[in-house]
Image (tube, rainbow, N blue to C red; front, side):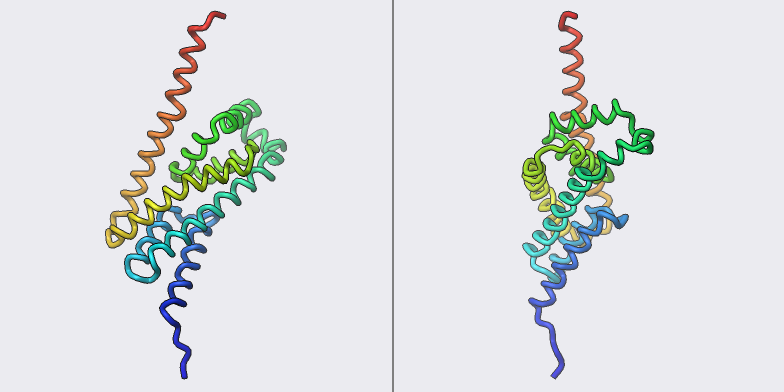
Length: 200
């Protein structure tokens, strides 16, 4: 008698495939957002339950983010201390970036999650700044849980739209720019204004 796979086995295999594809965006030139939209689409067509698609995608995102953070924590400082690293990034600029991450970890994580194409480098920089690992993981889980849910949900609701990926990427870019303005640019301008008013 032929071995017939049950629907449960098929859904489990699809869940693992979603996890693998999302995690592979660390090294494969595939936007993470497309993988998340694809997870929602697979749930829409019944290949996997929506909860399974969400949890598989979330696990891939959080494990990938944590690996990037740990890589930056362990290797990036050594590289930046080398001759090539000093040529790539000046000491003053490196110290400024690390101070920003130490003083404003919440802003850094928020910006990284919504800045398409810059998430990996920002998480490497956060790791190099060596904030407490538990704090990074807690913040990233909180932000990632919401963001992954939104994008997978959009993929589920509008999964048949061919223009969806483009619109979502532009939306994330707009959100990222708004976050940069609110969380970085305006506070820096206010800080400089206050410093100018203070007596020398």
